[in-house]
Image 1 (cartoon, rainbow, N blue to C red):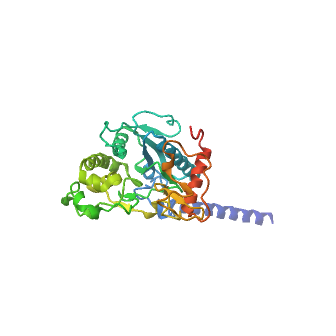
Image 2 (cartoon, rainbow, N blue to C red):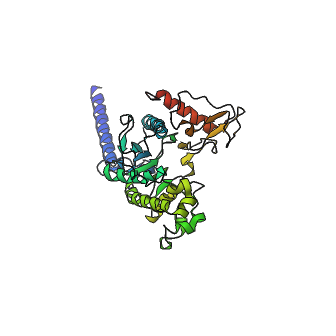
Image 3 (spheres, rainbow, N blue to C red):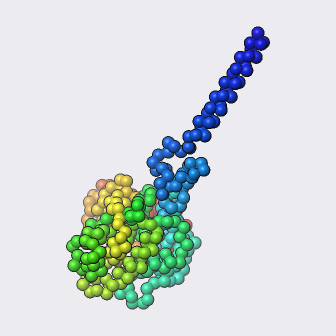
Length: 358
């Protein structure tokens, strides 16, 4: 009986060894990661490590968020709110695309918020050059930052102080193209005669110029390095042209960026879902950014009174010399979700940012 048991045990051990050996051989012949989704398929964005056949998540798809600003109270409080939400979404989500952040301060000197917000100090244009149109400092500030800063990421998101990030932003740029928000009021075809002064016919049809500004735009860093000097020069040239200056007004620099991007052959993927602009856009939905460029005025019935100061209002221009107080009153019932979300997000930021109002 003992002999039978020993024989059976010997057979069992031999079978087990054979099974383990078979599994090892099979495992060795099948590359790991074979069933990974196509997102990790070993393309240029996520190269496959040839040793372990697993994706190497490199820095190439991460982007650096850059915001240009003056040292005014108006720009500063907006940057502080913007950076609060950038940090919160990056840290809470583990988003690998949202990486570095820089406030490009074009005042020419450090301010009191250098330790709170990562900041690069750029020089403003020579006195009188902007002719009172301070936005002209934006492309010049980008030129300096791109030349002098050590930017680790291979992509840049150009954003603005009055942007609030609603949810983590992925890298929407693909195949060397930028990812940009289309503005209804940027109409290249309408101004073809004027734009041909900067975008000659041999560069292609006027439709090559996308209906965008410089922000929000995600694009390869190397593309922006080429575009930025042209953007600066075209902006200055447009401002010096009385016809163009009169036609474009406060969006002149936006047209200059769109033209410069086209001149360098950098097309853009137009993402209408990139951001919303209350009060005209009423729902947040799947958007990534709230751009609070317009004033939000309502009566106590929740009805929009645009063009007339409302009984309840939120307008960033009300806080050009002093930061908004903490705990702003919420809008009355009936006001759209986008406006309610905006005020709640401003309140959360101001409640959690140390020394708010200082």
